[in-house]
Image (tube, rainbow, N blue to C red; front, side, top):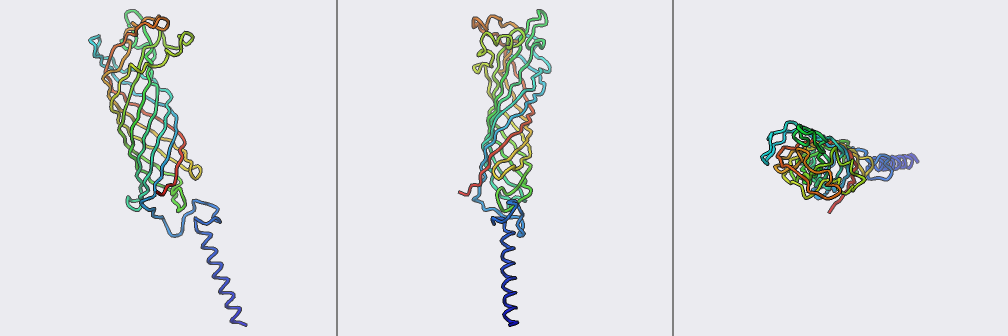
Length: 291
């Protein structure tokens, strides 16, 4: 009798231990927190596991004031501290992370293709840039900026679990190089908004008056998973490029009638370094892909 009781107690203990083990397994449906850490420690993901993602963001571009050097023989040749405006910016990314923490001291590598727009206009009227100080004639200079290029990234996952996303949040940094394009046109007497009622199609930058060069970018941010496959992030970018064919109507010589008759715009080419800080926030969708 005592032997039977002892055997039953041992069997119950074994069953209870097995059930407790299943409850601690992050893959078990009984786990309340799908991001719970396994008692076995930090997992090592296989080299074949990839984490593709796509993201959308919006924010503000904050250009630095920089000198303009005019190349058409008009004087003065250099205009100091052109006041590019801070305005909204929007764009998106397509990327992939390669989780390799067991090989890189806890870090993951990644790469993405980034693209975003912003509008660093120069308001009327800055002397000798878009206003003639002798006559007082001036225009605004409407500008759109576009950057497209790859970024190479590194991140450090925090709050790691065996269950995806293998890190509830992480800081990241990266560098990139890509295409930097500026499209420009003069506005009206005091900006194109005066002429919305005439033809609002003429109020946008003219893409034929564009200059494209190489842009260099640095990026850093923090991303946190809101849900299993959805994350929110905020990031700061620094973008620098040198252009040798930017345009402005520096003496307000473009006729106001251009918006009615289609008269040719008067533009003066100049070179300048454009460097801008961007603050972006957005959402990204991640995938757990094992090819």
